[in-house]
Length: 124
Image (cartoon, rainbow, N blue to C red; front, side, top):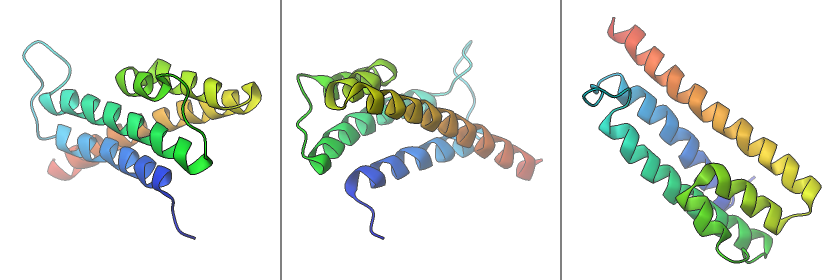
């Protein structure tokens, strides 16, 4: 089975969480903050990949994203991805897709935490 472009983008997005989690074990947090410079850069990467995914997913399904839905998904993914789903799918499929996206976010956060914990345990 070959993977289409939207799935490749999701794979890259998921792997980025793990890679940033591993790298966070080596980077000090910003002064007075709980995050590092890499976390800030990762936020921009997430935004770019969310925008790219919306465009690629729409093209793969033959749907042109209405208005600026893909751009909103890139600028503010937590709101933009559900808006994209509800503007490009029937409401039941959009709700299921939104729940899937929430699950993907939880999986990404777990990958990041797992990467950090794995690296710190190996370093110790």
